[in-house]
Image (tube, rainbow, N blue to C red; front, top):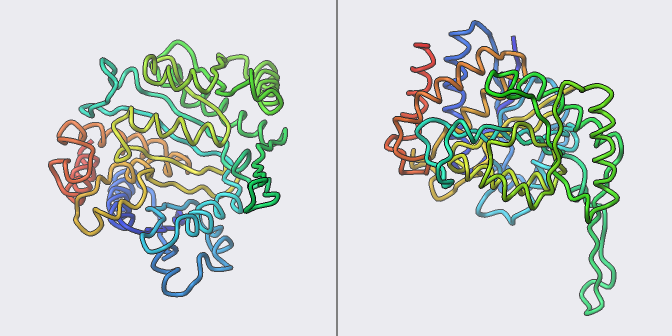
Length: 359
């Protein structure tokens, strides 16, 4: 019996979460696993009603679960940053979800803005370090509000933070890389950095990358790309990639570029992973308030996030089943964009669930 925490959140979050849970139910029935869900109303409506961003016991309450499924956080009536920092970042840091996992996968029938690239070429994953770097808040102001003001934001990494992120990338490549999936000659991990300019932080990343690779993962092919060159290759030669691993800030940037190459935010799923603890899975598209309540938002990113959640729980067969059902659904859709899919939100969820049942 798996215990799943559910945070539907704001905007269209509850709508896409409902479809992800619909498909999860179909997967449970087909593949024979049992689970129970507990819903939490963390988000903008709770904050506006109570003035409380996140209850004091929220982290400990969530730790009682095996995984968390998140819809979206953000509210048009709440100042930007309050909910994002107070809920998303707080949960990531306090639950030590030190990996952000972002598959970049183009599904059949989905249009990519990259000419002459299809599902065979756009099929890789980005492993982003998720609790260190520039996002830890190290820094501050001096003489704020004057023309002599100085603002400092520091990129800080420890050996431990770098090593555990790289280890996750190597392990992921060994299990799910292109050779492991039968679609390539090698399982490959490529470090994305800026060793020519950020000579302290990425010297550490580069040294640990090669030390770890030599000592423990000689079976994994290694590459290195500067982050600016990576952006170029993501457009020109995405087929070069298998598993990319990078820092928090660089990962934040390149994964959004990856999302648009795979057809947009409507199909982009992600996971905040603690391999030794509690992980949280979410669609990347945000709350999309203009589509709230219109049954017009694309739920596939949330459905694919549910598949990622099952994979993290060791239910690989069920995860692959959901992915196969999505691959059979996308060719029937007109677009991945909201209100342009040719179907409603609930109809897409129904199609995936029904397809899954027939596999």
